[in-house]
Amino acid sequence: MAIAFTKYHGLGNDFILVDNRQQAEPCITPEQAVDWCDRHFGIGADGVIFALPGQDGTDYTMRIFNSDGSEPEMCGNGIRCLARFIADLEAAETGSPRPVYKIHTLAGLITPRLEADGQITVDMGLPRLLAGEIPTTLAAPEEKVVNLPLEVAGQTWQVTCVSMGNPHCITFVEDVATIPLAAIGPQFEHHPAFPKRINAEFIQVVRPDYLKMRVWERGAGITLACGTGACASLVATVLNSKSDRRATVELPGGPLLIEWSEADQHLYMTGPAQKVFSGTAL
Ligand code: ZDP
Image 1 (cartoon, rainbow, N blue to C red):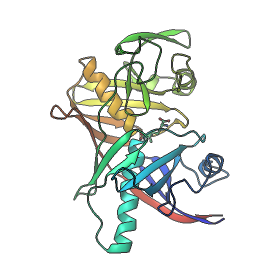
Image 2 (image 1 turned 135 degrees about the vertical axis):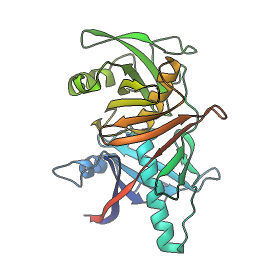
Image 3 (image 1 turned 30 degrees about the vertical axis):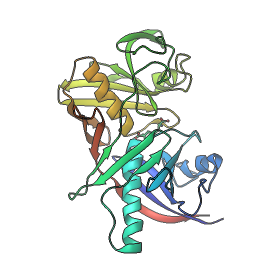
């Protein structure tokens, strides 16, 4: 069956967007998503994102399949792409897209806002810090995991764990450029301490308001950017008294501005989302 799609990226984290507003379930299977994401035999992307009808009073629902077919709870760069995609759909249909959308996700309500300068700011909600919420067995379920030792690849790493709806494990390093990410990333992802696997971020604190990050993503491997990972990393740097509550996080694909609000304790992420091309998958 021919299915129309549009490809977008947020800082090189690229997604195939599908207008799935006619039905509540994604119109392709996880197995098809794996084929679509293949960079040689398919369209090529880090994931497939579906714009579904809203629920619980929201405007739309977002679901996403990673490039390995697994389904994450949330996706920060992806929801900026979704907001741009919806705005493009609404502009074509009504001529006047709304600037703010309430999006239902498996991580709860997420609210992207289109800014006048073309950037998108997303209210990413509250971080979750308890080991049971991550989930991880590195501490008792009601305890936080801040600067605790984890054995990976014959080395002891001091890690901090944060959930943005999806699970993240953050490690501070002197120099992100020298981390053997392709070798150690899978060993973090599949470590038995993480029953739902993990996204692994490596952070170099350049200044309290400027962090450098590299990421190994659960279900997608090395990617150029990870919005939930940048938010989780800012929370981890604050918990370790290494950064301000507002910082630029520089990813291989470019910078995101992240703020952990004092007022409502939500994470706010500002960054771009760009359309690349539209097509039909056969
Ligand atoms: O949690 C996971 O399985 C991630 N691979 C989801 C995707 C995260 C993403 N890169 C982001 O920007 O938050 C899309």
